[in-house]
Length: 291
Image (cartoon, rainbow, N blue to C red; front, side, top):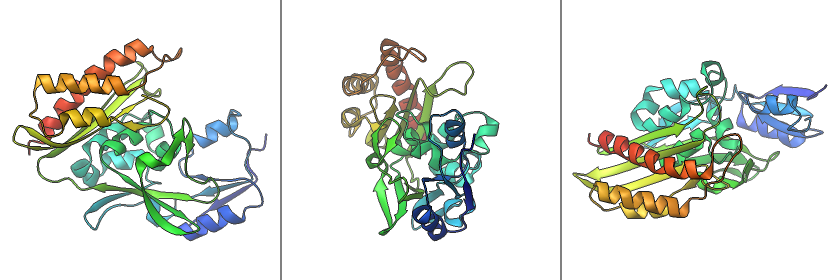
């Protein structure tokens, strides 16, 4: 079975976009390929004419500080995310999330951009990036622009990125300041490499025992990755206490939509464990924000 005809290794964003635009048939971007190649082989994705490999594009493979922001290229393998001192310093939740995706061999190949672009409601990297306040950098015919991460999604497996017209370049995250901390946890099956049954990330800024600001993200709690805005509202400006955390759990459960999956878990189980995860992740992020 022929899954593609032409393969092009791009060396710049312009090179990748021009190849996408001028391909004589369907073209798709590839970096790690751990999702796309399996989908092609197993018939879940129609054959493509041209694969455009962006794993050698310098702008997409860097992790660096840029004007008071942490930039992570979309083609950076997950293992580099986990091992990067910059990511460890400024984005603890992302380190924890990336370290749970697949196994070691998958993480050596799979990329952060691929995890986000796959548009799963419980993408581990996506949930962590949402809580960290990330923006996506996108290149297309009108130039390069930034978009809030939550604006990228239309539904399960569907993103707003124009498939053969735009390129996900990378992500900008706020650098960590004093008294800020983040955390990520997920529930998964014992083999440890399946898609998450449930995952949750939190970012907190504090002053003493008061939560000055907070961001929460949970998945799968609907058709797209999402922030828990009502739970954030309950926590913001309050003193951290068991009572406040309990109210936040109630708000999260009221706005989330859990479904039963015959292959993963029941809605009732997910609903119960969402409260447990929120308590645990909040406590970890709170402790980390003490310094």
